[in-house]
Length: 100
Image (cartoon, rainbow, N blue to C red; front, side, top):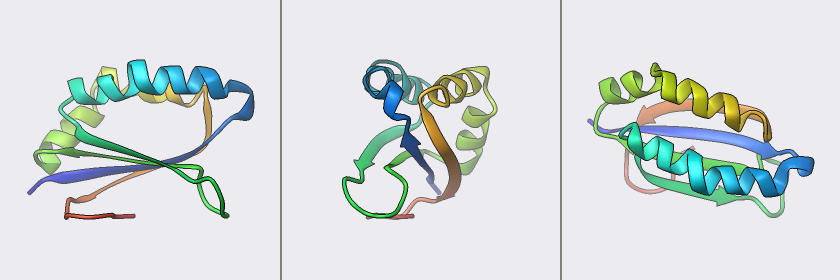
C-alpha cells in the first residue's frame, strides 16, 4: 500500500523569499529524487493553523521509511528548518483526497 507523508510548518517572516526559492528549487526536487512523488503544497492565508501543509506519496511504507532515513532527507529537513517554525510530520496510509 502507498504511504503518504504529511508535513506542516509556519514560514519565518524574515526568510520568506529564501524559503520559496528553496522549496521550488531544492526541497520538492529533493523529495522526488527520494521517490516521494505527487507533491502537494497548501498555503493557509487565513485562520489559526499551520501556514503550510505539504504532502507526498511513496509506493510503500517501506520505501517511505528508507527515504526518511537517508542522508539526503536529513539534509533537506535541516535546511528547511532554517526557514520555518513549528515543523511536524507524519506518515499515513495513502488514500484519495485530502488527508490530515
